[in-house]
Length: 115
Image (spheres, rainbow, N blue to C red):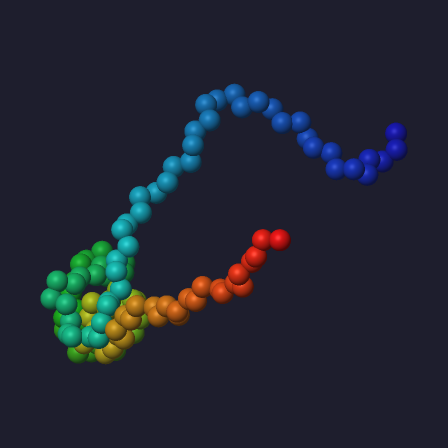
């Protein structure tokens, strides 16, 4: 026979087992970003250390003088840590300003007279 030039679909068999919908992973609620200038480290903010799973506060970043630079480089680059530990990380956040809405004018149409 001659070569086939049009695309050909392979036969698809009917599934033999039950069709299961995809499972979605649990999703954590979003954490809001800081809403104003830094007023000091949060006394209630905590974060989890990489590879250890230990939960610590802002003071941990500076508690070992020989590791301050490494700890700040590792953790202060993260938005949540730089926001919660803004004094320790040296983060200054700008206040959130609501968007400005330009005035909208209604188009003016000339009066229409009936014939």
